[in-house]
Image (cartoon, rainbow, N blue to C red):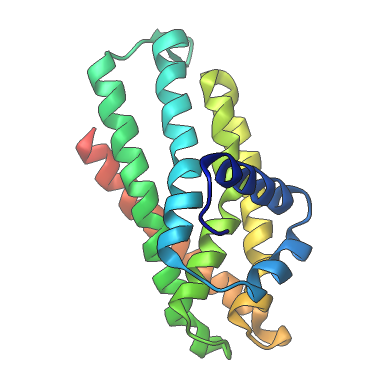
Amino acid sequence: MSAGEPSSRLAGLAGRAWSMLVRPRATWEIIAAEPADPRALFLAYVAPLAAVGPICGAMGLQVFGASIAGIHLKLGLGGTVLAAAANYGLGLLAVYLLAMAVSALAPAFGGQADLRRALNLVAFSATGFWVSGLFALYPTLGFPAAMLGGLCSLYALFRGLQPLMRPPPDRTLTYYAGVLACGLALTLILRLVAARVG
């Protein structure tokens, strides 16, 4: 994804997100051949897509509220905005930390340690999860949509390991398991941080 006019950047963002959702295997081959520019990646792709869930979730909570075990809750505007901002910031941090883990684990599984490629892998594979954040506009649909988006992202991550980090084919699955373990630990830590902020 290269810089350009706002309309072309938006078209590039939408086109890349769509291709990651419908044909991830072919899209990874294209991404692997592109120069990796972490700054452009964060500004043009990660920052806008990672904002979808927190913004839609905050709007949904303000309009519809949330229901837990038949109890209807409606949060104040200040708390909702603070939680959305914290989730957004932690989401951006998670991309970078998980990319560091992906790169650091690569040599242990015969892959190539490369933080730039790892950032591409983590950022683009998260597309399904981020796009599913649109459904958070209606909180009842938000959770199941996030689960489906998460599964889509896990599949994309698996498909991207081979072309980007280049482990031997017979070690890709164990590398993937190691990445998932790091991702789970990171998610738990960041959830605890988010809960304390909340």
